[in-house]
Every structure is written in C-alpha cells, then in structure tokens.
Length: 343
Length: 91
Image 1 (tube, helix red, strand yellow):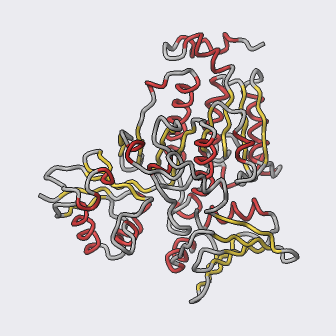
Image 2 (cartoon, chains in turn brown, orange):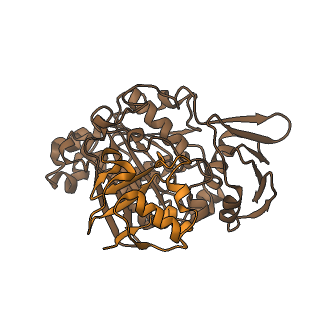
Image 3 (cartoon, one colour):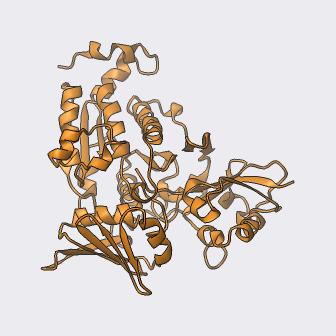
C-alpha cells in the first residue's frame, strides 16, 4: 500500500489535491524512448507517483549521454546497461511504491500496438520522426492521448494530442521531412536546459490528463528557443476540422500498416543491416557530408557517402538507402541511422 | 515596412546562422522569394518543386496557420508576426 503522505506537498497544490494524487497512483503511462526527454519525463512522473510506468528503449547507455540524460551515471556506461534497464533500476531507488516495467526493444509496426495497449497515456521520448509518426498512428487508432516532444540544439517543440478531440501529429505535420535533411542531436548537438523545459511541459500535461483536467491543457504548439529567449505558443485551433488528415480523418494508418516509412533487413553473413525507404525520397549527400564531418570520418563520391563512427561504417545512397556495416542487430542499425542520417 | 522573420534553428545552416532577417513582401510567398534572394537554397527547404509549401513546415501569420488562410498568397501587413515552425527530430 502506497504511503500517500509521501506526496503531501503535491497534494497541497490545489491542481492535484488528494483525489488527483489517488488518480495518479492508479494511472498507467508508457514512455517510448529513454533518452534525454524520456529520462526527464520518467524522473518527474516517478516522483509524482504515477502508479504504473512502462518504459521502452532500444539503446545502451553511452558516455556522451551523461551531459543531458539525467537518469544515467558513469557506472551505467561502464556496465553497458540498456537504457530501459538503467531507468528501471533508478526508478526503484526513487520510488519503491510504484510499478516500473522496462522493455528493451525497437518500437516498430509489429509491436507498437501491444506496447501501448494497457496505457492511459503515451509520452514521446523518442529521437526520430519514424517512430513518432508510427506512435501517432497507433495512438489515434486506439484513441490514446499522447504527448509529442522534440528538441535539438536549444530549440524544442511539444504538442499534446487527444485523438479526435485535438489535431493529431499528421494534421499538423502532414509528412516527415526526408531523411538526411533535419539536424539531430548527434549532428547539431543539444543542451540539457531545452530538454528539461520540453520534458517538464510534457510531464505537466501528463499530470493534467491523468487527473482529468483537460481544460488546463495548453492546446498549442509550444516552441521554445532557450538560447534566443523565444518562448512561444501557436494555438492549434481548428486544424482538426480543416485538414483531411490521413490518420485521424481517413483512419488510414500508413505507418502502422508499414505502407510508408522505413524497412530494415539484416544482410546475412555480411555483419551489415540495410535500411530502405518505401517513400520516394532523395538525399542531398553533399549537405549530409557537411553535417557529418564533425562527428566522424566522411568520404563522399558522386554516388554515395561513407561515414565511419566507432566500429561502424554507414554507406548512404542518394535514395536514402543505407548499409550499416559492423552489426547485424537491426535496432542498433536503426538507432545509428536515426542519429546520424536523421529520420 | 519590412517584416522581421525569425529563422528556426533547424534552418539556420541555410541562412549563414543568421537568427532574424528583415524582409520586404506583401505576402508569405514574396517573403520567401526575398529570403531566397538573400540566402540561395533556403526556398527549396520550405517549398516543393511545384512551389507549394512543404507539408512538414508550418508557417503562421499572427498565430494563424497559413494553410487555413491563403497559403503562400496569405497577406502580410505591417507589423505582422511571421513564424516558421518545422517538425524536428531530436530528443
């Protein structure tokens, strides 16, 4: 039985109160991605007493994570812990009253529905468009609220999505940018303050939803550039009535049905994984080369780009196809692609 | 009177890291054309080959999404606030 007095300061806050606290203790939240945003969201929700947390991540803790991923410590790097497991261990130390379930997995069209199924709410802690558009499909299909958040550099965005009541991610951004055109944290860097701000707004929205206070939601695209001192909201307004959205109007779940997006195949016996796109996309290899030069060794020819980072070599073609050498682990390869090419 | 446009971080590589630009133009489309004149290459990131706004970029004039106004023909009056919000990936 949870000791509710542990939350006395939060109960004193009129927005939560005793009833709100009891609701939190009975809530189920899934956080997809335990990187910078995910760790901050989980830390906040675990301390707030959200009773059942499910956390999912495909990656391992690395030294370069520690600057901004607040749940991890040097020992986790030394132990090469999966992020989801490191998060689980830390949450148990923070609040032993709540259930925490770690899933080490690549979230894709085969498992996303099962992963989100028991949740009252899903929070986006991912680092790529591919998984976010997939999450949007799954959450709209199953009418689950979810909270989009993203950050790079000192800039971040967040949108709270309640399927059929607010615009969904595809009402706002109808397609994802082509691979290789958007900066990622691994090519353009990121600082912790913008992560804390975006994840804290996401966590606050989560608490409002879990305690049933929908009128308090911000109803906007919140966008912040903490370096340039820009703190702004664009009202979502009536986009839901005005867009013929593939996902929430036509219920055509293209990412979930894997009719669009990315396909990964392990190339047998070659210690390589190939990533291809079902969309017809073109990559400007020259521009990608310029961005990658800060992160590793780049070779550019008329036909392809080769990029060496650590033990891996990524070969990228102009149609966004890539062969990742040095592993036959698909989640790992998809992670490297998301980090360096950017999807 | 020129309109001040803030360039969002993900696009600044294309604007020599400039954060804000003052541009002339009476519509969103004219502002983009003038931005392109100043920083060649940036228009291709905002508009597709047919000249329509790309579907992963949102432009707001005084807080209204131009998709629900007149798209690139949306009028920009003196003192209007124009924001460009691209989808971003990191996290």
